[in-house]
Amino acid sequence: MVRIAESRGKKGESYARLFGNEQLASLLSKVQAAVIRAGFELETMLEQWVPKEMITTLDELGTITDMGSSNKPDVQVVFRPARPDPDRPERSVQADLLVVDNRKRQFHLVEVKEGYVFDTKKSSGEQTSLKSITAWLAQEFPYSANYYFCAFNQQSKNAIVQGAKGRFRPDQVMTGRELCELIGIDYDQLCEARARDQRENLRYFLTQLLEIPEIRSEIIELLASEGGESETNND
Image (cartoon, rainbow, N blue to C red):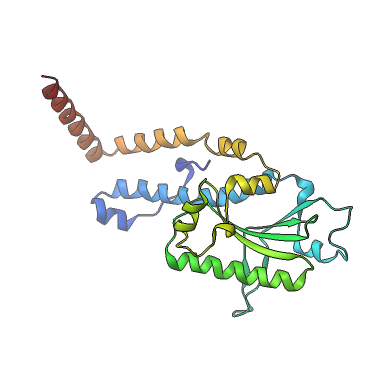
């Protein structure tokens, strides 16, 4: 898991305006940076944990006359598959990974997210990109192609559909466990590995809070107040 202590924050002007404390703003900015890094870490770990013999590229797929030939693994994975942006040729449209099912002659194009709640604009943008790449794949390769929106940490497909503002049907969303089953990864082991630094992150955050004089004073005052109220209630 990404460590807050190893993340670089900015001045955090918005947080400073919200709380009136520069040190707290800097800490919260580091937390935000760690959250963003965690998304990239997930993609990296998926690539590291997929069996090496399953990893391929679009170029390698394109050299196969019979893509379903018997000398290929039943399932292959292409990370960061991309196609030229039809509206802006100098740029490309990219998804997180492509699962190639050679037995069923199917492509599963997947966008992976840590969370599952997005605004309408973000959800629509993800759908548009996935549709564009899927249509291109169907033209370029002799496999059927479908796209999926994967919320890695959410176990409910209904929740994913609602979180993406209904831009994806239930059969177009995928849980992290389902994705891991497709690409040969133990979901529980991966989640356990990612959770190892959670306690350290908590302790670091609390320690940094207590090192801010104003925050420390507020916490001591609140604890004293809570203690007094508890004694009063016991009487």
